[in-house]
Length: 231
Image (cartoon, rainbow, N blue to C red; front, top):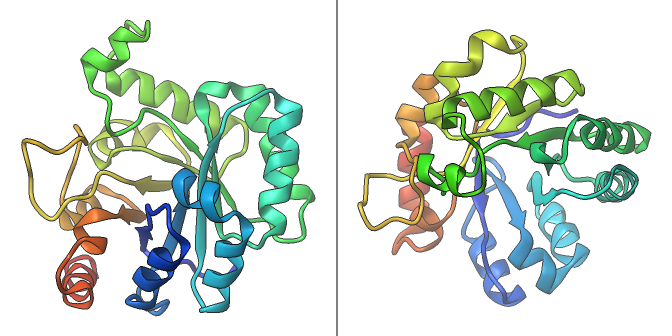
């Protein structure tokens, strides 16, 4: 597989024209594009094809979580679209992740397959509310180990989680980190956030950044500053 960028920009839009306008402000030389549930629900494969035609690598962030047979078929279909990264929810269990890997392996594309551990919007109180008694760190480690045992390429986690789990996972495991902000903001809906430089220093391989870039007055300037910061 071709080298993928260190930075993917989350295009969270429900309008295909606005999404395209945002993508046109970016450069495939510096970043890839993350297509999530909102954009994909509105635009479907069309936005994937258009974005790839512009030269961008695509991370399809749909977080598949279903019975193994369904996830296998979904991952095969996603892989056949030519995306560079796709993901599943580790909470779906090892059997589901093995099925996901099977679907990806069957494809002619074979993208990176990663597993979401604990969402960066969740803190200790949030995971307790859904019935987990372990700490966030322990929960992330359990799910990361399960993903590794299923043969996945890496995980999605907060950069803050990496230091606690890296020594117990494969050396070439990928760490994809959302919740990246240029500075801390007490009113942010993400709980476990870090700056780009902090994330890379901790060990993140790929950073996911959305609003700090897509809502910036000068998108190219902010993107350039971030690239310089993480290079």
